[in-house]
Picture 1: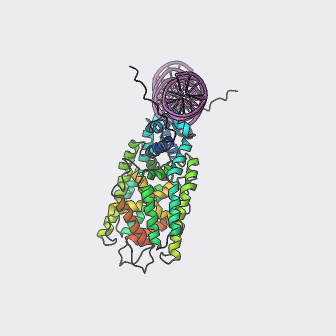
Picture 2: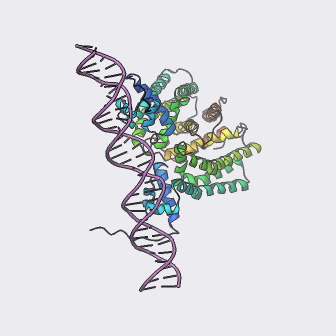
Picture 3: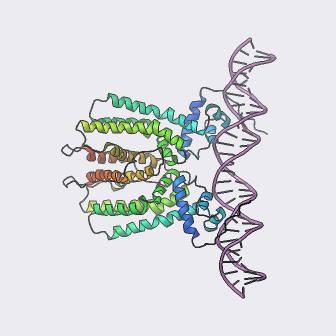
Length: 214
Length: 214
DNA sequence: TAGATTAATGACCGGTGGGTCATTAATCTA
DNA sequence: TAGATTAATGACCCACCGGTCATTAATCTA
């Protein structure tokens, strides 16, 4: 028996979101180059041809994933920073919390690792990600550090370099959590890891006369 | 005119080393999956067939690069740690210096990024790298921290997690330095970055009554 | 120098996956 | 209900690359 094909459904409105969701999990799982558009389509319950009906090509699909899922979070962070009234440690904590719940603790957390991994081979998407995400996120932390120094809460440091040093363990946490099998570092509780990190940062940033925050 | 092919040379002894050198730069530049063995061969001044005369396949070639260039440095580190007599900060510094001159400041610095990037798609090489490199390197730092705590030089911390937090910015430095174009974080002097990092770590690790080391 | 040895070659094979397009069929409209 | 519209399909094309192997030629040996 020739196994009649399943009936087609026409769902023009729902397709893009379903394709983006499937693309996210495939990209995070396999990386950019190794993701097969046929797999994305099948996971979205659709054929490869249909995918091309909604997105021009692989690159456009990836950009749409970022635009749809990550860029809005930066806008949210900028709103938080603009309206923040308390001390600067709390501002950093609020930004970290927002990032953790919207990105760090979701499937989107795999995107930074993908960018790190494939920036060299796909300069187009790396440049896109840099201007849409990295530059804005980094600016948020730099501004928070500068604010803390101006308010006398932090000792004076090189804010740009310190921002990179502070962000590094957070990014590495994402990288490790999305490295199946081999790279098992920091395989314990991510909360313990982040707490250990924050502990070091607070001791390192606080002005000497102040009591150490934990 | 049919452009006579250049004369062949028979250099059985020199080929492996030249192929390994070419493979290192290609792997670091392109990543594992995207490295084409034809490019490796051409860069070594040889045809693709010749490469297969000396290495079974891509995986064997990569393992040979690691075995040849990175594994010996771990043995060296273990020797240093075993014979170290001074304080534990100095031990950490000596290990970092050795690593920096043998790996961090050479083309081999691109290998950790490659592993991070492609562990998911190539579990075989990830597992190899983990047992040959990561586990031994991590053990060195853990032992140094433990030593410092036992000697009363460091405050008591969770040595495993702290090791990961300490190593993260160092790994991220490699990642950033090997991310052309897009990911321009920490694009200043790597020495400034490492100094900033060590500064934070020292303040974070030192027992409170002690004077802060810089 | 002639024949044997083997380092080196490059044409070739097969699987893969991005992207295309003629065809099919679900839904809408008159 | 008939015809038009268009969402959806999947067979197909083609470039790419890991890996193979019959052939070539550099070097050695008798």
